[in-house]
Image 1: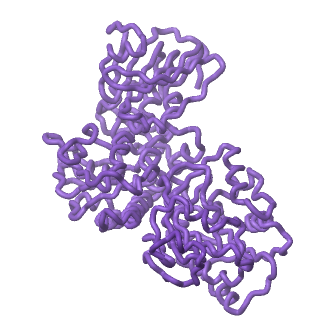
Image 2 (image 1 turned 180 degrees about the vertical axis):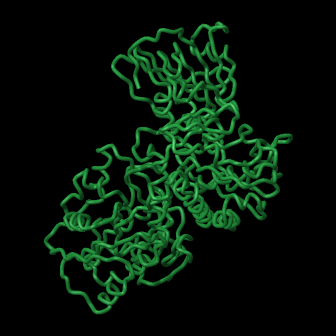
Image 3 (image 1 turned 120 degrees about the vertical axis):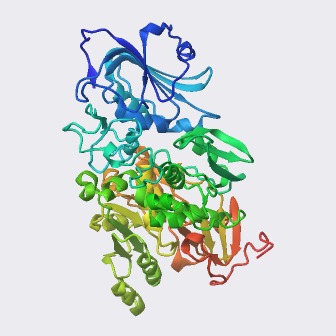
Length: 636
């Protein structure tokens, strides 16, 4: 919202904060003269912010400075800024630690022609990233903050919470909004209990916490969603450098926490985690929760959901019963799983994957709001239907891939089986197709059609909101599709997929694990794992009508269109590479086995499936080994 007329009132100078800064130091960094009487200090974490009415226009400011300790805090205060009004000059200051890597969450807002935007790193008593906007027009304070902290550059990440419009009245209840651009601040009546009716609000988030702060035993209140923009598996370290860290409650405090390693604190004390603390935690094998002195069950449970959403392995032998009730049976069971020995990186990562999957199904923002049925939202968010695009020339492999799809944990599935070439199938293949228990649509495409055209025909027939491509000769764990759907939700990426991390080289009869950088935004995923919406596929013109490089072509089209591509973990997918000389089993990507031997981190004899498959070894020596590379592997 931009106001062009000057107000007929005095303009204020305001510093809004989540923890009080050294104002003199702060303004010196900004090169702004400090006269104490000119400035209003506004604590956004105060128990109850005051406005005559939440629907009245906010004040007019000459300059408005927002100071936060993290992007996590910035996202939490967004609803509180909805009635802060407008300003001629806006400054957003984010405190950061160390290398400042956590600032990757901050966006640079769009500007108009007559505006000047500067981004600087400042160092005084603390280090700050300062984003400063000046111009002739009046700028809405909340919109400016949302541009920076709301991830509004990406359509999926700025989706409202299942159609529900939340109203909040203080910093604590705003944790339910988790960066939602439609949540707003609302006033309480004088008795602090009755919330006035506001047309733009469906439910008041404060009513979702009904406990008494004075009663440590009263646990009948709800945990808010976890902000998946801040807390996600992105950046999970498969091979951490450090061992164990422990969570401890700060002495004398009911709900203030500290992470400790070798009796030394890691970062600052905290009530709730943020991206700075998470960056420090990433280098540790696991966080030990055993022995934590619990007074505020809600506070500990919330921290556990944040750590779990980020995929941080947690050592929990005996979880407090009240905390367990808040977390729910499934998540509690995952928390108390075994974190196997440190030298088994695959098993440690598998524990993390189980943990994050359990918490996501319950605490991802849109799923959390919808599952609770808050504000009549139960019917608003629907788990998307997924169509599996399965194109094959190798009909004898159809039973194997159908069996894997039958085991998928995700239920809203259909298969578009595009048989490319000779439509004749053997009796066992027909039996497999007819025995498949789900929805299956069979297409026949002439052999002269390029592979990309076959994929286009299958995609047009598909009825699902989401499309995912699977290859007939590769291996997929039961959670493969479920994890892709979750990844699309928490990453906000338009296209998601897995890396080619595990490969079975049939000619050598070995399984390799290549090094990779963990979950992250990228420009490449395995073609046999890609998932995107049917609408997005149409928008970029579909698959390239060629015989080779159709996967690469689609990714390039998506990137040029401004889409984001996200790579999940690699434990749900094993690429099966047959010998290059095998004409009847030729791959559309004609790469030599040596390509899959680069940057190998681990290696096993035979076909060895990752821990997410439920069994590490499914058949060593299933295929005849080629002698071509035996000299490279002394153990073969």
